Image 1 (spheres, rainbow, N blue to C red):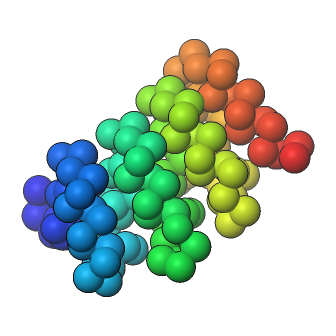
Image 2: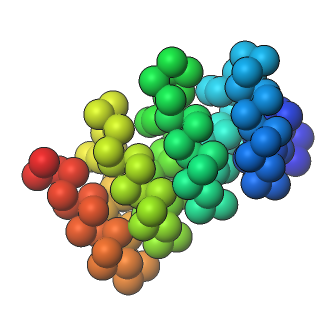
Length: 130
C-alpha cells in the first residue's frame, strides 16, 4: 500500500480517534495514494459513516468528487458495494455530483443497479430529482 498517508491508514483501519487527531493537526484530506484513493474513498469503501462525516466537515474542503485511478468517486465505490448509509451521506453533500461517470461511462446509479442495490439506487435517484 504505497503512498498511503496516516489519515488514509486510519480511515482504512477504522481508527476514529486517530482520524480526529490527524484532522486536528491539519492532515491533507485530499492527498491520494498511488491508486488515486483519498481518505474519503477509503472511508466509503469501509462503509464507515463516522469517518465519512468527519471528512465531509465543511471546514476541511474535502473533494467529495475526487477520482481514483479508475475515475471512480467515493459515491461510485459506496454505490457499487451497496453501502447505503455512506451513499446517503455523500448525496446529502451539496457538492456531490451524482451524474459523474467513470472511464467506461458508468455512473453511481448504474453501478448500484448492476449490483442489485435498489435502496442505494433510490437514494441516488432522489439526489438527481431533489
